[in-house]
Amino acid sequence: RGRKTPYIPVERWEKINKKGGNCMKKMTNVELTKICKVFCQELWGHKLSIPVKIDGKITTSLAYFRHYEESEKDRKKLAIDIKFSRNLFEYYDEKIIKSVILHELTHYYLFISGSTEYSDGEKEFEDELRRIGSHPTKKIAYCGKLYRVYCSHCKTIIETCKTEAKAKKICRDYRSGCHNSPLDYRVETIKQSTKGLTAKKKTSEISEILEG
Image 1: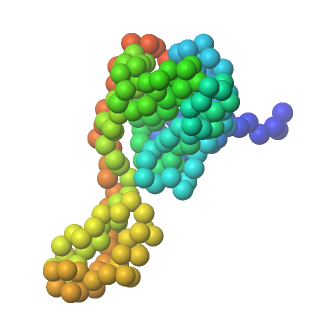
Image 2 (image 1 turned 45 degrees about the vertical axis):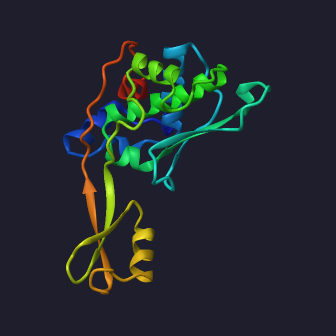
Image 3 (image 1 turned 90 degrees about the vertical axis):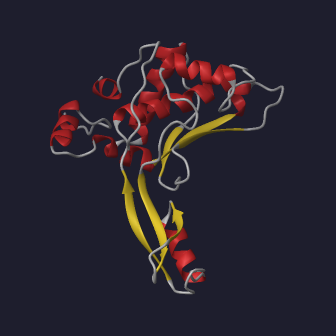
């Protein structure tokens, strides 16, 4: 009684959705860990053995699995963690978030299982993605904020950046090649366009996991 729960009640998520908000923006590391543990158990009967984290500094990808170089040692000891970009939860819907989580967990599981084909584009990895209903490599379109650097004279786009810091640096250090004019930038928000995929292997929905 009076104890704060680390999870967001489904009723609250539904209220956020009705107001047009994105309930996934509220995702925490505790919730993400719970989701990943459930998926590992449902898909492979495996207990997650590494940390999973949300990192606001990741801007060039949605997520990645980190591990030490392969060796003859126990693969489980070589796995480090999985990090997810805050942008994933900020701009994508639940279907895509789930797909990205499953994608990274597949890298992790195949790696610790001793597979030699745990990387993007390799047959065993891509086959497993199809089985569990995750997206193939490089099939999720970017959405979120983009910073368009342009010539202040003719408005021609010079460069597109994913971070404001890079856009500011270009504007500070360079001039346009077309009119030798100062550079400026504007912010654009790219909306999601990727659809969810059908899985051969059924897994729980994220909202169901957080309710339990």
